[in-house]
View 1 (tube, rainbow, N blue to C red):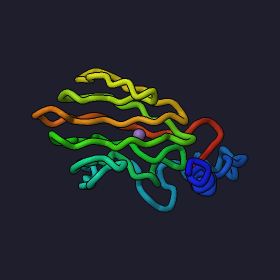
View 2 (view 1 turned 180 degrees about the horizontal axis):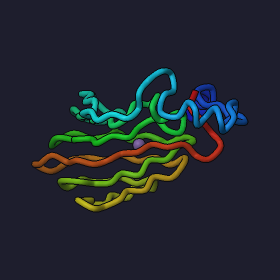
View 3 (view 1 turned 90 degrees about the vertical axis):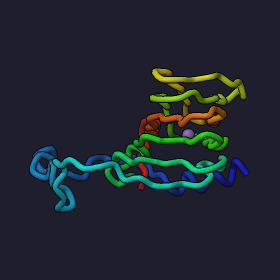
Amino acid sequence: SAQKRDGAEAARIKMAGAGKMTAKEDRKNAGNRKGETRLMVRKADVKIVENLGGGKGTAYVHHIVSKDEMLGHGRLYARVVLPPGSSVGWHQHVRDTEPYYILKGEADFIDNDKTVTKVGPGDCCIIQVGQFHSLENNSDSDVEFMALIYNEAGFLYE
Ligand code: MN
């Protein structure tokens, strides 16, 4: 149920606390938190996902940063490739939002009110906090888009 999902979501999210470190400590640790060097160039980490968000077929999710690297402010920043016949299933954004930016191909964006809009390169699909959406590739060519999921103000993922 929606209520149960909200409860699970709430358990996963905590209120952003007051800063635990001073600005001086923040500067000292900048770029070297957890002993990791942050200045680097690498390839995106590609994950092959079946039935993304309950959708059809396969999706290739090129993670630009990991959820951990989003420092609690979000959970996804990725380039997603949807082959013909694949889709991102109908799902809700609780306490976060996700703009899509279409890079390639032609897709059907299904908005919160179930309206279907053909989208292509340069189109931005705006999904607001609490809304549902899905995206279908009903064409004969790959669809590629950027997806960014970030939290509403005041919340950090644990
Ligand atoms: Mn989404």
